[in-house]
Image (cartoon, rainbow, N blue to C red; front, side):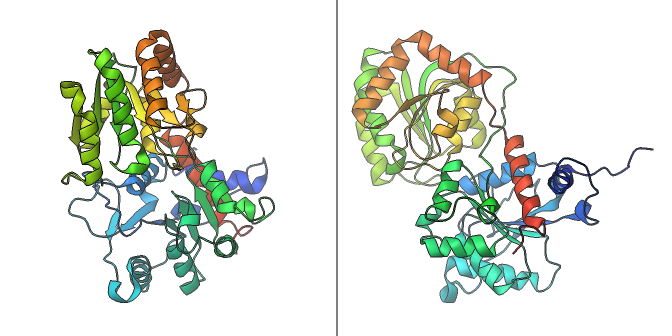
Length: 401
């Protein structure tokens, strides 16, 4: 008679890892594993204005086969995602601890009155992970890195990262680039290094087949200097006057919500003024509207100037079957190599030349669109499975410290 409650995806990962090829029974409690996912205290776990980390966490939980095992912990919001268990937690004594440690202290205080989860997964904050592990050494704690830890408190020295590696049960990274950043200056092989994993960011397609594209260059993201928006605007203002059927649309604001224009956004708007109706800055838009624009745009630009860990907008461009124009920065080449038009020096001159090529060479543009559609392995399901494997390693006695 079939098992009425077969092992879930993460239990199966656990069996495979321990058996080295032969199936052995999972732990007795493997069907009841519980995970607390801690957001950075400034992240908003809401469909209306979720930040980058909250967006990835949402995709991780939804794509998991153990959907009901996760509890997301974050600061209170008015309208949290209603299909994921969410625990609103105000920062504790911010005036004394600061935001990061204040949030960690609030979580530790909450745990005093309830059973501890099997794994505490701290997203994006080295300092929080280290503090929780120091105060509760009995907890298994994993750190899920969305950005370069060398720029973070608690991870900005080799010694600090060595301590994290020794004390925590797993380090999970959104790209191989971020994994390399964490291991910078550390031994890259051996038992400790094996605790560092990549669960590459991924997004699922919303289309069953590619749609007819419009002659639009689309940018979606935060309107900040490191995203290269001004350089893109300057490039478009040089090229589009010769191609009146084309337009550029910039979607986003300085943050993840509707606000007034920043001084940087004003500079971008000024650069676009010569284009008149060929240019549009929409400001912040709801996710559904953004998806529609992405599905229709012939070209999607992600012209990052900084070492981008692995932004979702590039993935969304490929998932939509659009021609992706991007840069060789950070983790971007991990998804873009062979699938996109990549520039090494993202200044206005280089971007202008790239736009000219993508607009005038129909064969090249269509080839990129076809490749993006036909060669797309970066699903949220794959991301969730990779994260599940890392969690099972963290829960094994072999790697637990």
